[in-house]
Length: 431
Figure 1: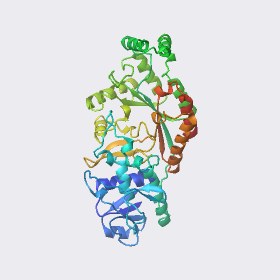
Figure 2 (figure 1 turned 90 degrees about the vertical axis):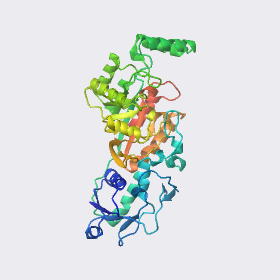
Figure 3 (figure 1 turned 90 degrees about the horizontal axis):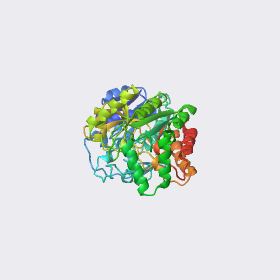
Figure 4 (figure 1 turned 135 degrees about the vertical axis):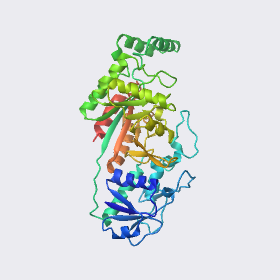
């Protein structure tokens, strides 16, 4: 047990300490504001305040964990043994910056509460992030900081009890469009046919007609392939199905289609199935609950996991809605068109709601790799080089690598063989 002394225990303080020590490093912690209890403690202990008490392990605190609300913070990024860091501390600090405030800043997505320009889908741009602007988006800096801190603590307290973590890989399959041509209903099928005909898309016309006579030839129907990969590599794999009515941005097969329902049930026999929430439900909690309830009725199992359409996150409202709909875990924290660590970590963490100053009861699983962030690469070797660099960083900190691939992109004909690329990634990086 590691004892941490501070002058004031706040929700932010508790949140940051438990994430860094317990969830990332596997160290149990307790807190105290009493000097006499700290001095009497004979085990591992650190001081987190403005001044050390004696000659103990001391980290000088920034004010961030003791504030409330949002302030426009000036951040200057420096380096700690080659690793970017910020909230620099004085020389008498055992660590040259406030690791806990810096971790909280990234994990809470503090910068996403600040004024910023959203894209057409209401998303925060990666180019506005501190990590992107300072070239550390592809580093899980929170995890790296934590492990470097652990090295220093073990030098001082070699008997510190640690429950060490191990590397994990999770493959997420996003199914927002289960079929390209099949099972889409007469009206939508004919509208697609006329659109292809009007734009002289001859190749698509032939494919469309072929699929009408044999739905198994639909290019997006990669589910047997994906399940074979799951079995072959004993893969931790989660399928997120959209189960929503047709709208401008929701164009999946109708949830009333029996073939679509059978597909979901058959996939659920082999993999965990959860909900890819619709674009329309983003600000409609009642609709979100209905989608969840309908999918639960199909698979006859509880649906606890979510992913939002187009990775839309509006801090903290998106997560409040998910909590209200009784989701326990979300897999949306990442960028669609940039690989890397949006929250600075590869480990799951609970959502901290800054407006309410409370930890929300939903666990956020950050992903580092999205297939559309690899879409512009010219070759499979270029893609594998990028994925390998992410893998190496996560492996060093015994974190969790999560990749997002869609059955839609896997069925796309272009210069990259996406099925082969996906299989190679799973083969090389699942352990």
